[in-house]
Every structure is written in structure tokens, then in C-alpha cells.
Length: 227
Image (cartoon, rainbow, N blue to C red):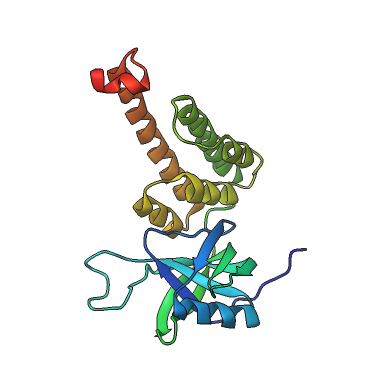
């Protein structure tokens, strides 16, 4: 049963490299660091909510700042958690909302951040968003035919999602291999722009796959070094 969730002004947060966590996505996590073990204990005793932000490796990120996070992140709720005999835990976190990290409240004993919920824009352009969603699906199908590593189960699941926002967020989280692009998609609040950005990347990927096929010629994959 779904329940209405009210976000507090502050939450615990994890900062992880090459991770862009999206609303509705399911993120498996292995909790082993002492600070995150303590964080998880407190989270499970409270509202089961914490934020996951990507680690901002840009030189422009806060000079000397410990684990500088990207400004846009997502809050998730712990849907399942299993504690192991060695004190570590495996959990499944489901994204529920994009947020802006407004400040770092503390880093001790674990990071807590101020947050502000963010809503997508441009959702009212239903026909335009639906067309872009259909184009994303068409391009994903073409990538599959060219042999791109797209799980048939994921492709089939995406076909069942009619809502363009949920569709593009789950597609980006599951199928986008470029961490910088994933973060850019997470930060793009305008839904038509987010869909359009994903469409452009898929077209670029298809152009590269097409060129690769032409260069490969009739050779099988294992014979490419002979070309």
C-alpha cells in the first residue's frame, strides 16, 4: 500500500562516486562503513529516509571540502534491509523525490544535509512528452537490434510505463552508462528537455554503432581483430 511521505528539512545522506539516483529507481546498497552503519540504524528507527548524492569530482567543487556532493540528488526510502552476521547490511532503496542539497549540516558521525524538494516542469505538454517517450523507446529498440547490451526484461518493463517522467528517469538510471550524462539528466527539471537530451544521446550512440558495423563488415565479433 502506498503512503503519503512528508519530507523533513534535513536528512542523512550518502555521497557516492559515479552514482546518480533517480525517483522510482531501486538502488541496492551494501552498508559496511561504520558511519553508514550508524546512519542506517538511526534511519530504520525513524522514517527510513535518506538522500543519495553523487560525488562531485569537478575541480570547481568546494576546495578542501570532504566528499563534495552534487547539488541535485534524490531521497529514497528503505524498502527492504537485511543485517548480516558481520554487522554489515544489504538494503534496497527506492527513490521518491528529486531534491536540492541546500547545505551540509554536519559530517559527524555521518553526513546530514538540508534539502528542498524539486518538481519536474513541462509535465503539462502531454502530447509532446508522449512523442518523445515513443522516440526514446524506438531508439532503444534499434540499439537492441545493433547488439547493445540492453536487457530484454528492462526493455519490456519500460514499454509498460506510460508516464513519460517515470519512463525517462528509470531508463536513464538503468541504461545510461555515462555518469556525467546521468547526473545531467537528474538535474534537468524540464521534462521535455530531459527527454530530448536522452533522445540526442541515443541517436549519437546509434550513429557510433552504425559506423562500427560498417567498419566491421561481414566479420563476426570474434574476428574483429582481423579486420
